[in-house]
Amino acid sequence: MKQDDIKPNYAALAKQLGCDYRTVKKYYERDLDNVVNKPPKPSILDPYKDIVEDKVKLSCSATAIYKFIQKKGYKGCYSVVKRYCNKFKVEQHEKATIRYETNPGLQAQVDWKETKIITSKNGEIFEVNIFLIILGYSRLKYIELTTDRKQETVFQCLINAFKYFGGVPKEILFDNMKTVVDHAKSEYNNPVINSSFYEFSKDMGFQTILCRAFRPQTKGKVENLAKVMDRLDVYNNEFESLDDLDEIVIELNHDLNNEISQATNERPFERFKKEKEYLNKLPNQDILEGFITKPKTRKVSKESMILYNKSKYSVNPKYIGKNVVLDIKANTLYIYYNKELIASHIITTNKLNYKADDMVNILKTDAFKNKDDEYIESFVKKQLKLYDSIGGKK
Image (tube, rainbow, N blue to C red; front, side, top):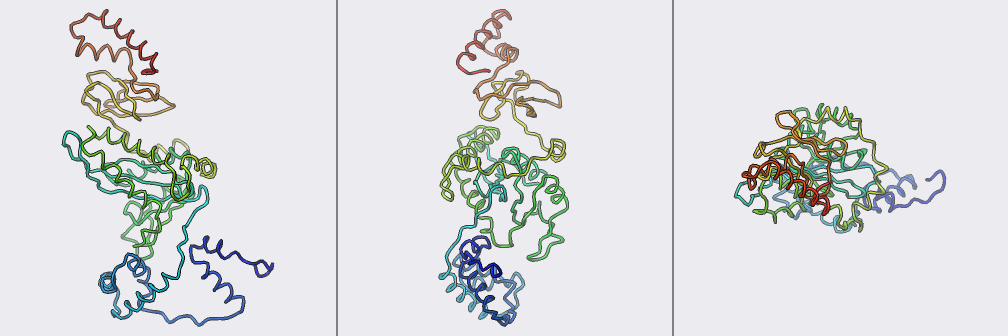
């Protein structure tokens, strides 16, 4: 800029660097005037200043902060901490807050809503986790219900998210979760990504970015999303099974992406149209399947149906109460029991999807058990024609 005599845009530079515009202006003008400042004397508090600043922002007292960083290894005296707290409070009042935004397709942020307790209408208590990922530019979200936070579960959730987005962001921001970071090899402020996750990120085509320790606001977008998961609390005592709860989470995800974001004043679905083309392409299917270890399962209901994306699909009634495995390929739902294919359906948005043979067998086990086959088959044909006419079956 100096060589070409270009006046800098301090506000734009500050936004890019994530600092106050006055800071940019100060260093620019200092260098312009060839003023060399004597570097400040190192302080014993330097390695802990980020923690102190975070705790001051939370209105913690100097005494509480001093006791906290002592447990992190601080060997200095209390007066140093108190003096810095007072100084930082003054500086904090003088600074303006700048929202950190990212370019389309550049970044996503990941987190968990951990160990959420929720009760079914039958009184069954479930401990679940919600995997959360949000694209930085569009605020498009993907959330998924899980029963653990193992590394293979993280891989599966990320792959499902990439499929949902139709691409992969160039970088993903994580905190120091043990499925990502090798804690045994890490040091304070120097985390090491574990080898399995590194290989996964390389195959998927994204760079892993770790937020600084004790600074959760670094990934504020996904932290805010985690708070929104309290919207699931209203479903306490309102669902029957884990499958039902899974469908509720899927519906919540759709609702969130269709609501106007306070940050962008746009719906994530609409803003994503501008972002999608900037995402990296999905890896080929062989690479994706190499990391998929946990198939999607469902329990067959008393109606002899399984629930998938708010639609019900029939199976033979002999599988009622059994856990079956779902496989989705080319808009077709394949249903397996003990690795044996027991049913397949074209995926639709219709509420009920019956196969004729399944309906016949269902009727034989219940209301029509005393009717002959010819009568039942005739009834089924009429029913399926009725479903066709009202959109109950495709």
